[in-house]
Image: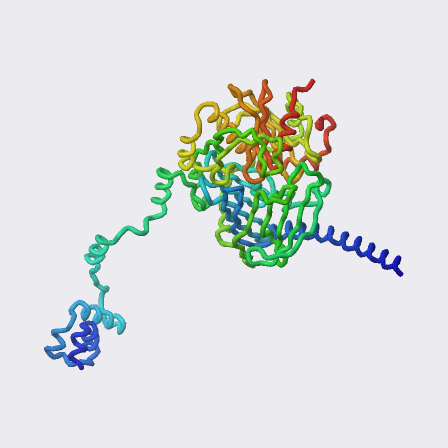
Length: 202
Length: 316
């Protein structure tokens, strides 16, 4: 039984020899793990306050060896930001944690691509009767600014020249509307507070 | 006997109707109060036709300070941060800027977080059915347009916390055009630590607002002859558009709930038909009137946008 134990675990033998649990005969000494024994003895000394002078454990070699084979799975945050800046046009979503200047990254272009015009009234939707509908391929919600990179393939597909111009213009209009409506509420409140000039409403 | 029953019935009908109006309004007012006082962390998606936009919405109130963050999670992104009455917009294509206003102009109309009674002149508040949204019991409140030139706005409000759970632009046929749906919400007694961090941040100073003096500079190069009932001019000027550097005469109108932008520009070369484009509730109508192009953008039906665009003319 003890033999099985000896073979099973050198660590256990080391521990038991140190505790005086096993006799320090040849069999147990054979199975003794020297490094572990030294460490255990040192721990014991420190705990019993026998040890004089500083603790001296040299782990630099083992740490260096371990690091050699360690895959980089935890890059520092500053590197991450750089990667975002250079490569993909991604906005850091937790902006307030980072310098604000890093927000300006992507350029957004046309938001809606026009691929043709359908002058036929659409039978399915009743609200567009008599209203010609420009055929469009909206992406990513259509009117939200999308990143330049995701726009590229769609732009390539879109027809050249005039349509591109109109498409650009519509993109600019939608963005401008979105921006202007941000001040709308404040303006409206201001208008309610100040009496209306009669010539304003025409 | 019959007469009495009839009178009683009428009386009850009136009473029910009256209390309905009060309750729908009261619910909206409770919601407006709740979004300003509660600490919550919510996620929602906006469905526009085939497109979808996910957002995160966090709000905290600590003492007298209100902190709010709304961020668009897809694409190039967009972040809106509010500290009390200063809202800062972080956009991918331009530097950050602030506006002194006390609510974020996101996918939810700002007026719903404020004094909704202002809407009563153009909209009716109607109580709808009860249901279950995002795992919570909800009550539908419909903001119905008084005429059919505008869309209706429906809101589903949490009956316990009074917070918004779902909202939609609905056309006069009852079709949901653009939906906003919360996928998760947690209401906590303590504000989120990440929001409190905002207090230590510096934000750009707010842009100066247009004063009433400057309002006299309103361009009257054009006359917008027709608008739906209730729309007032808020702003007009001539400026270059950011993306393509084109010059435009610009007019901004609002009825409290929706905003309409009217652009008058130099016509693009070539023969182009006029037409509408829509994404969710947003309509862009481009009208080619020969000597100039008129474009109308807003959350309005295409037919309304067309009528507005075609009504623009030079003043006599």
